[in-house]
Amino acid sequence: MTLCAMSSTDLGFIHRFIPGRDIGLAPLLLLHGSGGDENDLLPLAHRIGPNRSLVSPRGKVNEDGITRFFRRAPDGAWDVDDLRHRTSDLADFVRTARGAYGLPKPVALGYSNGANIAWSLLLREPGAFAGAILLRAMLPFDPRPLPDLSGIPVLLIAAHDDELIPVERAGLLAALLGEAGAEVTHEVLQAGHGLTGEDIRLASEWLASRG
Image: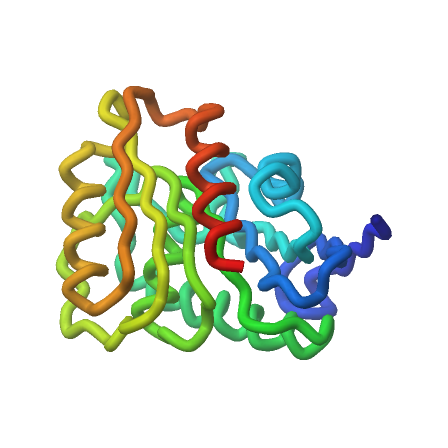
């Protein structure tokens, strides 16, 4: 595969773009977790969605050396105003990247902080994604009113022993997305916050079943 990297001055985010072997498949938009960067989810994405194009931006927030897509308070609470601003910024990037690389709607593949901004963008602009894989996401506040997410497939994988995200908060997110009409598959693993081989298996099978 040919690797192409562009700087933040080009499309608004420092990011990596890897063109896929099969341009007929929906690309993956990779959204890393706290402390990650544009390289973190590439190996995971190659296993979950081989042959797909990959677009992987780096979150713009840097809190004491920890890179994120949106800010959090010292006590861990979300900065909801910043989330809304950063979600709009990411939406602009997705549109620009699609035009620059000639891509169809992507499937979001987000982990933790990245998964949370993915569902925020899904609610803000339902037409932005062809689907979403949300790994270790949660719902800490009520984002109603909800858009119509009818026909949009979402895989949400939570962990029973997640030390950072209460499993019931993931359940609330699954229920809310289902209420909005999304086709939600909700899995709970006997695992912690870190990703496992079972996450990869479930995500790859789910993605392959949707073409």
